[in-house]
Length: 366
Ligand code: MSS
Image (cartoon, rainbow, N blue to C red; front, side, top):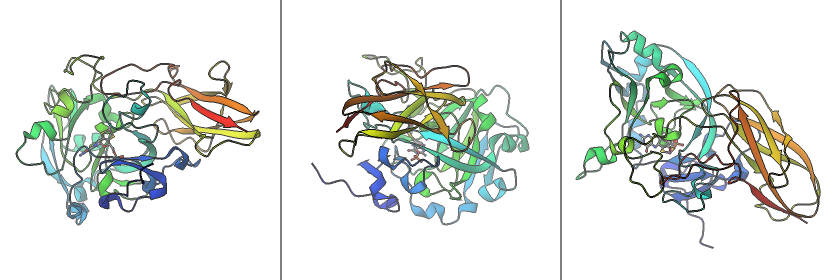
């Protein structure tokens, strides 16, 4: 096998043993690296950059970073220093790429073949967007979307709209959204969007715009390519267009992290089946585990504190496995009674794979 790719220099501080480097802009957390203490350490959190990360000079003066707020009664530029006077909230949440699980689609859609590791559970702190909006007189008439623009320098000689990271989400998402400057108890790393990142709990990764330089309340969705035709649930064999659902809210999902089968045959006898479960936009309520390929299911137990609606919960089920091959899988239910589906919704981009069958693990017991 080819030697593992080294960490790109802008994320040289990541834990190399925990990461699978797909490309310089796509790094996945190894299944075996998810511990059982809920929070994903920043050094082990996945990375997805649609554009090269900005220069480190943008975090030299974090408090001086400016964001333009538009589509409010009193639009204006605000510095992070000013935002810090306007409010403070903390949210623990699952940050998950829209394409997490793409590598489990049998037809191998183009894009990074993520397994389960384009996700993590992290703590963000910042000012609630609604506090900022209130301070600026409220949302201006007619706006139904919240649109965030990333602060990357765009490559020259190409249409800016074709590359810029600008995402619109329904205005309702403002209720729990933050402009965050801190992650996991430290200043927001540049690679994760420092100095300032838009946080939209319950929505897929792409909607959480890094190095945000503009927040606008808009009547229309952004006309950037990443919004218009990118990140849409495009049916197989069709072309992406604006009539198809945008990849926004996350659905109920779970997977097993251990035993992973990665370390070769397991010793027969007692073992703890462990994994993560989350509801996406709703809280997760319960999770079941099957060790016989989905024929029978047993309720697993959540371990550790409940960190709120948007966080994942880790689960455990003690089992005894005899010699042979076993298929392990998990299936979560959210607080609204939505059950993680057996199948996936096929789509060109390979987005939103929550299928419990696709996430099954084969383990060999000797
Ligand atoms: N933002 C910006 N500005 N840029 C870019 O590139 N990306 C996306 C988000 N945001 C971007 C942004 C994506 S796509 C994702 S996932 C996320 O981010 C990730 O994060 P981290 O921190 O992990 O890297 Mo898919 O849906």
